[in-house]
Each structure stands twice: as structure tokens, then as C-alpha cells.
Length: 254
Ligand code: SF4
Image (cartoon, rainbow, N blue to C red):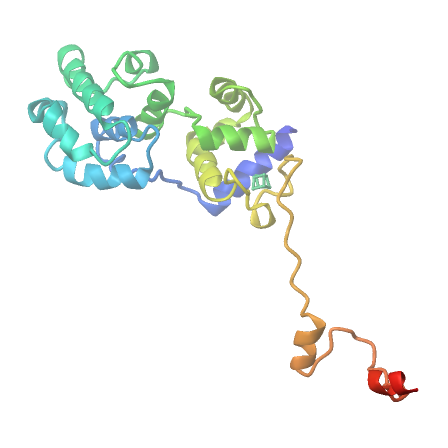
């Protein structure tokens, strides 16, 4: 894909949504609640995480409070989220580590973030981007799909797509690229049947198998005649006179 096309794609995203926001509602509160929300969101929906954290964060929004809450009670708050047992263990362990090694603060560099239990490269990138305003692009399933389909940054692994996006995304768009691409993948370039006919970047996207537009339905001849109209625009033909039919009885008697 040419740099001109790439710039045009981001320009359209920017015009439609100049200040994109993620959908984890507690992500903006503080770096710690953001970190916990992102750890909980692995293989779960943002809506599900938001429901759980709406009750959890009023009682535990710092590492101290989370450790005091304890793993068992934390499990109760998050039991509606997939993999909650493992996530509860990780959240308590990462909170302890933050207290023991980082003065209770969320570190601002990727390498250190990745040493926290339950935190991988994607989570670290999200935290760096949203909490600290770093121009990182965390590649999740949506961004992976969009990067490949559009040919913006094709790659076989999330890391390849991330490196590609880092390389081709102009600096001015890097801060918001993560949110633009994730929202585009979640709501327009969806997994099963992408909404290509209404996609705002369809003319720039290089996906070979775009979803075709559905042609408006033509009324059937019967429906049209019921309405007093004709599906056939030609004038009605007059009926030719038909010869009288002979009944089978008449034929037998002939
Ligand atoms: S045109 Fe289709 S495949 Fe391309 S980005 Fe839009 S929705 Fe995705």
C-alpha cells in the first residue's frame, strides 16, 4: 500500500473521530485501574469487564486496597469474566509486585511492565498508550484482522503487524492509531462479514474479497400487479382470443 493511501486512511479515521476513546470505562481513572481492567479484558468483552469493575474499583482502586481485598474476595467480584481464577491470581500478584518493587506505581516502560504477572506486550502497549500517552500500537484480534485485510500492515503474527504499523503509520497519527483501528475492526471490518458497502475506507482498502453491496430488491410481477403497477415497463399486451377448450368427456364421446 502506498504512503499516500495510508495517510488518506488515517485522515478519514481522524475526521470521523478526532479523539477516539477505548471502551473500558475505567481506563482513564488512573494507570493502576487501567492496568487491572486491561488484564481482566483478555479473552473477555469490554462490556463484561466494565460491569465487574464498576463494583470492584469503588472498593479496590490501588494496589494496597487490592492486596487487602485478597484473592478470594476478588474472585467474587470478577467471577462473571472468563478465566477469572487465573486473572484474580495475577491481579493480586501484580499488585504485590507494584508495592514491593515500584513504590505502588505503574511503571512507564514496556520491559518493566512485561515483568508483571499477567502482563504481555499487548497489555503493556495499551497501558503505555492510554495511561502515558506513548504512541504505541497494541495489536489485538481486531487490529490484526484490519492490518491484514486492508494490507495496511500485513503479517502472520501480531508482532509482525505491530512492527508493520509502527513502520508505516505517520507520526502524527500514531497516538490514536490503536483506537481507530480497534474500533474499525470491532464495528465495521468485523470478522464474519465485513461491512464493506458502508465502510468509510472501502476505496482505499486492498482486500480482495470485499462484501458486495446488496442490490435493491425488485418487486415481483405478482406483487407489482397487486399494487396496480407492473414490474415489466413495457405496455400491457392485449390478450389474444383463445379457442374454446374441449372437455375430456367431449373428447371421449367424439
Ligand atoms: S472495505 Fe471491507 S475489508 Fe476493507 S476495511 Fe472496509 S470493511 Fe474491512
